[in-house]
Length: 213
Image 1 (tube, rainbow, N blue to C red):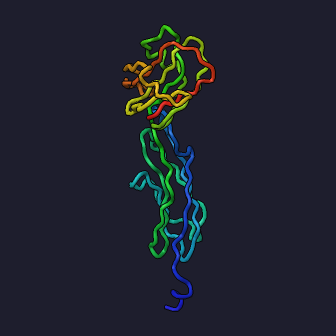
Image 2: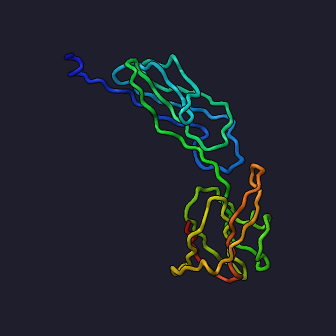
Image 3: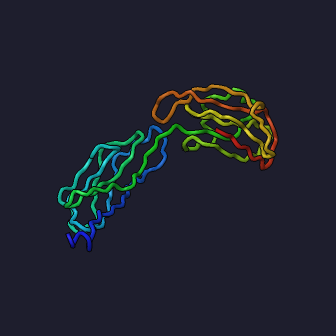
């Protein structure tokens, strides 16, 4: 009892990393192998078990970890090509458990943005794919145009809807963009319905446009 007062129980601490690390990747990308690393600091009790998890499922267990803490690694060899989270969990001799922060893996269809020739009022898949590709999660985009008689264009993947297009002076210019639907084949081989916004031909220098989602 006195020891409990003088030396109160403290759970271990754990940090976690993965290689390749989490992040945003294009749908159709597959990670074949991920090396998971947990760094554990012992506190009151010896370390009894270390687990690695994908979302809520245990994918690997180290049943005889370093009792005094340290580094534990596990290689996950199942392909990852869909959204998930990876993390580690430590259990000490008193059955106190602590989860690490997670690495998030996100897979998206890309956004395409840039300019088209004046003749491309109804852009094709190839013309869209020739624009700058951005592998990003849904959010407001900004793009600066320096163009001569070209059309400003943004092609949004499924799930994206632009609420407003704003010019450098803060004016809403959404109505000046034609809205079209174009089928674009993703890296995963599936046809995706993109919402494409195309302006009239224009000449601009350093013209910063904000595409609000």
